[in-house]
Length: 93
Image (cartoon, rainbow, N blue to C red; front, side, top):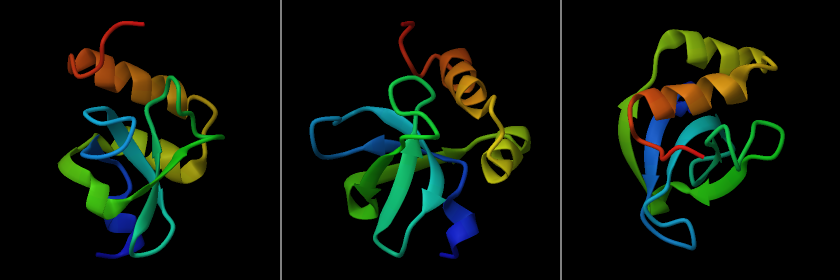
């Protein structure tokens, strides 16, 4: 996969302390590692680094959020958080 193919995918953590947590891929470092954000505890300025083999790729998110991620927009964290909440994927908090 090319690096831009993974940006904007919703993933589920399969290993580690954050098992069963959902994130959005905001950047691919190389073929093994990606940076993740959930818009709440892991924000765009301080994303979580995780190996691809420890993630399950679930689905894409809308193009507005993907373009916001690529442009490093200030409102990206809020958009990601709202997207995950509206889909009832993340608990309120």
